[in-house]
Image 1 (cartoon, one colour):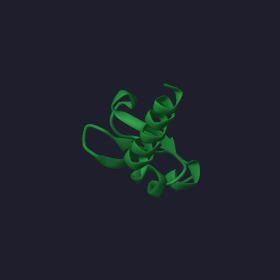
Image 2 (tube, helix red, strand yellow):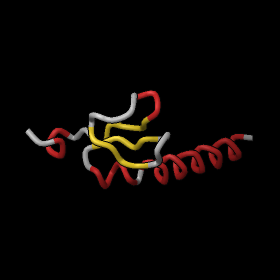
Image 3 (tube, helix red, strand yellow):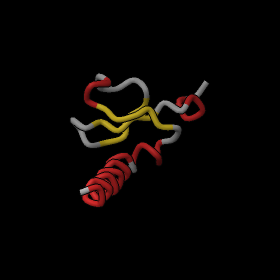
Image 4 (tube, one colour):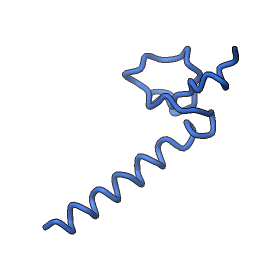
Amino acid sequence: MSLVSDGQWWFCLKHMRVEPEKGCPNKDRMGPYASEQEAAGALQRAADRNKAWDEADQDDD
């Protein structure tokens, strides 16, 4: 079975790159993601969510 079909792609925060399942320890990674492309967008997705949460918090004040 290939890694792509398993959905085991991660974004390594230590090396700032996408890795397959066998890579750095999970404590240094974001994921798993269903595809290499999804993992590559992990930081942008997190930044977008943080911005939305910050804006929601401001609305609550």
